[in-house]
Image (cartoon, rainbow, N blue to C red):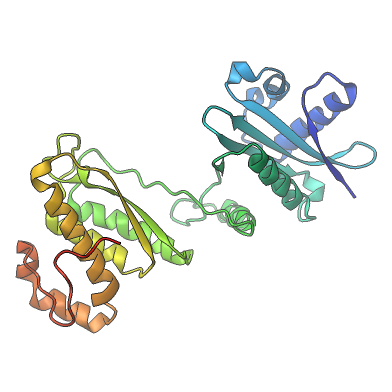
Length: 292
Protein backbone atom coordinates (compact mmCIF):
# COMPACT_ATOMS: atom_id res chain seq x y z
CA UNK A 1 0.00 0.00 0.00
CA UNK A 2 1.22 3.48 -0.80
CA UNK A 3 0.03 7.06 -0.98
CA UNK A 4 1.00 9.78 -3.44
CA UNK A 5 1.81 13.18 -2.00
CA UNK A 6 3.45 16.35 -3.22
CA UNK A 7 6.68 17.67 -1.76
CA UNK A 8 6.99 21.44 -2.04
CA UNK A 9 10.50 21.96 -0.60
CA UNK A 10 13.06 20.52 1.81
CA UNK A 11 12.20 22.58 4.89
CA UNK A 12 10.61 19.76 6.89
CA UNK A 13 12.78 16.82 8.04
CA UNK A 14 10.22 14.36 6.65
CA UNK A 15 10.43 15.96 3.21
CA UNK A 16 14.23 16.17 3.30
CA UNK A 17 14.33 12.43 3.97
CA UNK A 18 11.96 11.75 1.08
CA UNK A 19 14.00 13.94 -1.31
CA UNK A 20 17.16 12.04 -0.33
CA UNK A 21 15.41 8.77 -1.21
CA UNK A 22 14.32 10.21 -4.55
CA UNK A 23 17.94 11.10 -5.27
CA UNK A 24 18.93 7.52 -4.43
CA UNK A 25 16.38 6.23 -6.96
CA UNK A 26 17.75 8.64 -9.57
CA UNK A 27 21.26 7.29 -9.05
CA UNK A 28 20.09 3.67 -9.23
CA UNK A 29 17.67 3.90 -12.15
CA UNK A 30 19.53 6.52 -14.19
CA UNK A 31 23.22 5.67 -13.75
CA UNK A 32 24.33 7.95 -16.59
CA UNK A 33 22.78 10.99 -14.89
CA UNK A 34 25.34 13.54 -13.75
CA UNK A 35 25.97 14.17 -10.06
CA UNK A 36 25.11 17.86 -10.54
CA UNK A 37 21.68 16.97 -11.96
CA UNK A 38 20.86 14.80 -8.95
CA UNK A 39 22.23 17.20 -6.35
CA UNK A 40 20.30 20.25 -7.58
CA UNK A 41 16.85 18.72 -6.94
CA UNK A 42 16.26 20.48 -3.56
CA UNK A 43 17.30 23.81 -5.09
CA UNK A 44 14.89 23.30 -8.01
CA UNK A 45 12.02 22.94 -5.55
CA UNK A 46 13.04 26.00 -3.54
CA UNK A 47 13.93 28.41 -6.30
CA UNK A 48 11.68 28.33 -9.38
CA UNK A 49 12.81 31.79 -10.54
CA UNK A 50 16.40 30.59 -10.88
CA UNK A 51 15.40 27.77 -13.23
CA UNK A 52 12.53 29.66 -14.94
CA UNK A 53 10.01 26.90 -14.24
CA UNK A 54 8.20 25.51 -11.23
CA UNK A 55 9.26 22.03 -10.16
CA UNK A 56 6.56 19.74 -8.76
CA UNK A 57 7.68 16.56 -7.00
CA UNK A 58 5.28 13.69 -6.32
CA UNK A 59 6.38 10.71 -4.24
CA UNK A 60 4.68 7.39 -3.61
CA UNK A 61 5.57 6.34 -0.08
CA UNK A 62 4.38 3.85 2.50
CA UNK A 63 3.24 4.28 6.08
CA UNK A 64 6.82 4.36 7.35
CA UNK A 65 7.84 6.98 4.81
CA UNK A 66 9.84 4.75 2.50
CA UNK A 67 9.68 6.20 -1.02
CA UNK A 68 8.63 3.57 -3.55
CA UNK A 69 8.59 5.82 -6.59
CA UNK A 70 8.50 9.45 -7.71
CA UNK A 71 7.65 11.81 -10.56
CA UNK A 72 9.31 15.17 -11.20
CA UNK A 73 7.19 17.59 -13.22
CA UNK A 74 8.18 21.05 -14.47
CA UNK A 75 5.51 23.67 -15.14
CA UNK A 76 6.14 26.72 -17.33
CA UNK A 77 3.17 29.05 -16.63
CA UNK A 78 3.86 31.67 -19.32
CA UNK A 79 4.04 29.02 -22.04
CA UNK A 80 1.31 26.88 -20.47
CA UNK A 81 2.99 23.51 -20.77
CA UNK A 82 4.25 20.80 -18.44
CA UNK A 83 7.38 18.73 -18.89
CA UNK A 84 7.79 15.38 -17.17
CA UNK A 85 11.49 15.24 -16.34
CA UNK A 86 11.60 11.91 -14.48
CA UNK A 87 9.22 9.19 -13.39
CA UNK A 88 10.43 5.96 -11.82
CA UNK A 89 9.68 3.32 -9.25
CA UNK A 90 12.37 2.15 -6.87
CA UNK A 91 14.40 -0.83 -8.05
CA UNK A 92 12.55 -3.25 -5.79
CA UNK A 93 9.09 -1.87 -6.70
CA UNK A 94 9.01 -1.94 -10.51
CA UNK A 95 6.01 -3.59 -12.16
CA UNK A 96 3.72 -3.04 -9.18
CA UNK A 97 1.52 -0.26 -10.60
CA UNK A 98 3.39 2.58 -8.89
CA UNK A 99 4.53 4.11 -12.18
CA UNK A 100 1.00 4.06 -13.57
CA UNK A 101 -0.43 5.69 -10.45
CA UNK A 102 2.24 8.40 -10.51
CA UNK A 103 1.73 9.10 -14.20
CA UNK A 104 -2.01 9.40 -13.71
CA UNK A 105 -1.39 11.90 -10.88
CA UNK A 106 0.92 13.89 -13.14
CA UNK A 107 -1.74 13.99 -15.87
CA UNK A 108 -4.30 15.27 -13.38
CA UNK A 109 -1.90 17.99 -12.25
CA UNK A 110 -1.20 19.10 -15.81
CA UNK A 111 -4.92 19.28 -16.50
CA UNK A 112 -5.55 21.29 -13.32
CA UNK A 113 -2.83 23.74 -14.40
CA UNK A 114 -4.61 24.17 -17.78
CA UNK A 115 -1.48 23.09 -19.64
CA UNK A 116 -1.75 22.77 -23.40
CA UNK A 117 0.18 19.52 -23.19
CA UNK A 118 2.27 17.19 -21.09
CA UNK A 119 5.61 16.55 -22.76
CA UNK A 120 8.48 14.22 -21.97
CA UNK A 121 11.45 12.57 -23.63
CA UNK A 122 11.90 8.85 -24.10
CA UNK A 123 14.65 6.93 -25.87
CA UNK A 124 13.68 5.46 -29.27
CA UNK A 125 12.39 1.95 -29.91
CA UNK A 126 13.92 1.91 -33.38
CA UNK A 127 16.60 -0.83 -33.70
CA UNK A 128 18.51 1.30 -36.20
CA UNK A 129 18.94 4.00 -33.54
CA UNK A 130 19.61 1.75 -30.55
CA UNK A 131 22.06 -1.09 -31.09
CA UNK A 132 22.13 -2.43 -27.52
CA UNK A 133 19.43 -5.17 -27.22
CA UNK A 134 19.07 -4.68 -23.46
CA UNK A 135 18.54 -0.92 -23.71
CA UNK A 136 16.27 -1.38 -26.74
CA UNK A 137 14.04 -3.71 -24.70
CA UNK A 138 13.80 -1.11 -21.92
CA UNK A 139 12.93 1.59 -24.45
CA UNK A 140 10.16 -0.54 -25.96
CA UNK A 141 8.69 -1.22 -22.51
CA UNK A 142 8.77 2.47 -21.57
CA UNK A 143 7.00 3.52 -24.75
CA UNK A 144 4.37 0.83 -24.31
CA UNK A 145 3.79 2.10 -20.78
CA UNK A 146 3.07 5.62 -22.03
CA UNK A 147 1.00 4.39 -24.97
CA UNK A 148 -1.42 2.71 -22.55
CA UNK A 149 -2.33 6.21 -21.43
CA UNK A 150 -2.75 7.49 -24.98
CA UNK A 151 0.66 9.15 -25.30
CA UNK A 152 2.21 9.20 -28.75
CA UNK A 153 5.77 10.05 -29.80
CA UNK A 154 6.93 13.27 -31.41
CA UNK A 155 9.63 12.08 -33.81
CA UNK A 156 12.03 14.45 -35.54
CA UNK A 157 13.98 13.69 -38.71
CA UNK A 158 16.79 16.24 -39.06
CA UNK A 159 17.64 17.17 -42.63
CA UNK A 160 20.57 19.16 -44.05
CA UNK A 161 20.37 22.75 -45.19
CA UNK A 162 20.10 21.78 -48.86
CA UNK A 163 17.68 18.99 -49.78
CA UNK A 164 16.39 17.66 -53.09
CA UNK A 165 12.94 16.22 -53.65
CA UNK A 166 14.29 12.68 -53.74
CA UNK A 167 16.15 13.12 -50.43
CA UNK A 168 13.02 14.50 -48.84
CA UNK A 169 10.87 11.59 -50.02
CA UNK A 170 13.23 9.06 -48.46
CA UNK A 171 12.78 10.73 -45.09
CA UNK A 172 9.05 11.18 -45.62
CA UNK A 173 8.74 7.45 -46.30
CA UNK A 174 10.32 6.69 -42.90
CA UNK A 175 7.89 9.02 -41.16
CA UNK A 176 4.86 7.57 -42.94
CA UNK A 177 5.87 4.02 -42.06
CA UNK A 178 6.03 5.02 -38.42
CA UNK A 179 2.61 6.68 -38.60
CA UNK A 180 1.13 3.58 -40.25
CA UNK A 181 2.58 1.43 -37.48
CA UNK A 182 0.72 3.42 -34.84
CA UNK A 183 -2.60 3.06 -36.66
CA UNK A 184 -3.60 6.70 -36.31
CA UNK A 185 -7.23 7.74 -36.72
CA UNK A 186 -6.55 11.17 -38.25
CA UNK A 187 -3.58 12.96 -39.78
CA UNK A 188 -2.64 16.65 -39.52
CA UNK A 189 -0.12 17.90 -42.07
CA UNK A 190 1.79 21.16 -41.66
CA UNK A 191 2.36 22.00 -45.32
CA UNK A 192 5.46 24.16 -45.60
CA UNK A 193 5.55 25.42 -49.18
CA UNK A 194 8.65 27.45 -48.40
CA UNK A 195 10.57 24.24 -49.15
CA UNK A 196 10.08 25.00 -52.84
CA UNK A 197 12.98 25.89 -55.11
CA UNK A 198 13.56 29.63 -55.21
CA UNK A 199 11.61 30.49 -52.06
CA UNK A 200 13.24 33.58 -50.47
CA UNK A 201 13.18 32.06 -46.97
CA UNK A 202 14.28 28.52 -47.81
CA UNK A 203 17.27 26.60 -49.12
CA UNK A 204 15.57 23.45 -50.40
CA UNK A 205 14.81 22.79 -54.05
CA UNK A 206 11.45 21.00 -54.26
CA UNK A 207 9.65 21.27 -57.60
CA UNK A 208 5.92 20.97 -58.33
CA UNK A 209 6.37 17.29 -59.22
CA UNK A 210 7.98 16.75 -55.78
CA UNK A 211 4.99 18.28 -54.00
CA UNK A 212 2.71 16.04 -56.01
CA UNK A 213 4.75 12.96 -55.10
CA UNK A 214 4.77 13.99 -51.44
CA UNK A 215 1.01 14.46 -51.46
CA UNK A 216 0.54 11.09 -53.12
CA UNK A 217 2.65 9.35 -50.46
CA UNK A 218 0.73 11.03 -47.63
CA UNK A 219 -2.61 10.29 -49.26
CA UNK A 220 -1.72 6.62 -49.55
CA UNK A 221 -2.26 6.31 -45.79
CA UNK A 222 -5.97 6.92 -46.51
CA UNK A 223 -6.58 8.77 -43.26
CA UNK A 224 -8.92 11.72 -42.66
CA UNK A 225 -6.39 14.49 -43.25
CA UNK A 226 -6.27 18.14 -42.20
CA UNK A 227 -3.73 20.23 -44.11
CA UNK A 228 -2.50 23.50 -42.59
CA UNK A 229 -0.33 25.74 -44.74
CA UNK A 230 2.66 27.04 -42.77
CA UNK A 231 4.85 28.80 -45.29
CA UNK A 232 5.53 29.73 -48.89
CA UNK A 233 6.56 33.21 -49.97
CA UNK A 234 7.32 33.01 -53.68
CA UNK A 235 3.97 34.12 -55.03
CA UNK A 236 4.76 33.12 -58.62
CA UNK A 237 4.95 29.40 -57.74
CA UNK A 238 2.98 29.21 -54.48
CA UNK A 239 -0.37 28.36 -56.08
CA UNK A 240 1.16 25.85 -58.49
CA UNK A 241 2.96 23.98 -55.71
CA UNK A 242 -0.16 23.91 -53.56
CA UNK A 243 -2.27 22.60 -56.44
CA UNK A 244 0.23 19.85 -57.20
CA UNK A 245 0.37 18.79 -53.58
CA UNK A 246 -3.41 18.53 -53.24
CA UNK A 247 -3.68 16.73 -56.56
CA UNK A 248 -1.16 14.20 -55.33
CA UNK A 249 -2.96 13.89 -52.00
CA UNK A 250 -6.23 13.17 -53.80
CA UNK A 251 -4.57 10.64 -56.07
CA UNK A 252 -2.98 8.86 -53.14
CA UNK A 253 -6.30 8.60 -51.35
CA UNK A 254 -8.51 7.61 -54.28
CA UNK A 255 -6.48 6.56 -57.31
CA UNK A 256 -3.98 4.10 -55.92
CA UNK A 257 -6.14 1.72 -53.93
CA UNK A 258 -5.24 -0.89 -56.56
CA UNK A 259 -1.44 -1.55 -56.49
CA UNK A 260 -1.48 -2.82 -60.08
CA UNK A 261 -2.98 0.45 -61.26
CA UNK A 262 -0.23 2.29 -59.42
CA UNK A 263 2.47 0.24 -61.15
CA UNK A 264 0.86 0.70 -64.54
CA UNK A 265 0.62 4.42 -64.01
CA UNK A 266 4.27 4.60 -63.07
CA UNK A 267 5.32 2.71 -66.21
CA UNK A 268 3.06 4.37 -68.76
CA UNK A 269 3.05 7.95 -67.58
CA UNK A 270 6.61 8.48 -66.45
CA UNK A 271 7.43 11.15 -69.01
CA UNK A 272 4.15 12.98 -68.50
CA UNK A 273 4.71 12.97 -64.77
CA UNK A 274 8.11 14.60 -65.22
CA UNK A 275 6.38 17.40 -67.10
CA UNK A 276 3.67 17.71 -64.47
CA UNK A 277 0.95 16.84 -67.02
CA UNK A 278 -0.11 13.43 -65.70
CA UNK A 279 -3.76 12.56 -66.21
CA UNK A 280 -5.33 9.55 -64.46
CA UNK A 281 -5.80 6.44 -66.56
CA UNK A 282 -8.90 5.33 -64.67
CA UNK A 283 -11.33 7.11 -62.39
CA UNK A 284 -11.58 10.87 -62.18
CA UNK A 285 -9.16 13.08 -60.29
CA UNK A 286 -10.00 16.78 -60.39
CA UNK A 287 -7.13 19.09 -61.27
CA UNK A 288 -8.04 21.30 -58.35
CA UNK A 289 -9.51 19.27 -55.49
CA UNK A 290 -12.19 21.24 -53.68
CA UNK A 291 -11.28 22.57 -50.25
CA UNK A 292 -12.98 20.84 -47.33
